[in-house]
Image 1 (cartoon, one colour):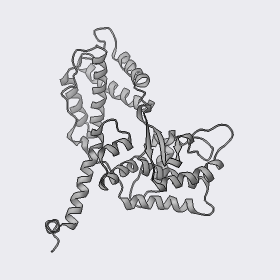
Image 2 (image 1 turned 135 degrees about the vertical axis):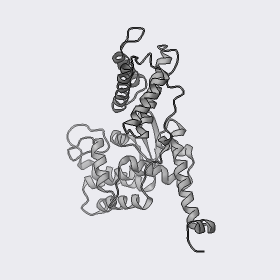
Image 3 (image 1 turned 90 degrees about the horizontal axis):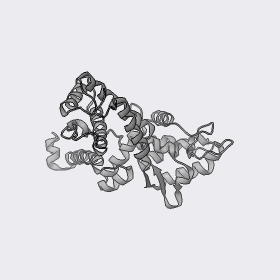
Image 4 (image 1 turned 120 degrees about the vertical axis):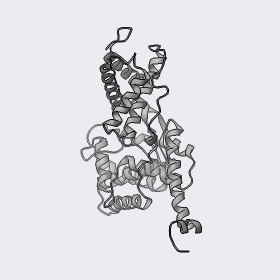
Length: 313
């Protein structure tokens, strides 16, 4: 399908991909996801005799409904809509279209599903498991590395990609902080607690030197072969130390960090800065998490709460 300027949908998607990579600085995985979503929408519009440029609001609505009909979960539907909104904002900015077909399309209400997180005692169990191995007299560099990664994931709420991209010079342990490169190559400073600082110091002093091989390797966390770790490897490591009967992931530890901070009284702006959220709206989901925690505390400790829960006074 071609637009009025003769540009095909394929070329439009390619140009938008270049914009995301070069001007927005998005990572390859993010660009690939956006490209796939746009291609899926373009295919649907073509079946309806339209194209990306000529698509109307009803085309976008039909696309959303079709996704729901195929059982696509609300979070994925909302992500695809977010992709389309970004694409059409770019089209408007580039004066390729006169109106935005996504303007009055709302995300699914279920978009604000509460993030899945681990309980504090479950995270403590995981940290004790890796910490016990790291404290052993014959602890290997790998054991020291694993414990440092887990401490950093939970202490700073880092994304798995941010962990893999860290370099030794990003650490400022004397000031208890680390410089992180997040989405779009945006940098932020993340403060660290005492436990994370100590785990990183031990890894750098006693663990990392034994993992370094010939040549220069700037990555902070190294494999047994002296290479930078992959995202998949970090996922597998975290999954392996999960509490019995529970699943864990780097992303769940990130949610746990934010959830536990809010439950202990942290303000949303601070959590937003820590996690590197561009929009406070992304962080506001944790207010719902905090409210659920507050309700539980109320039911457990307030006389009326106990009575409502069916507990004898």
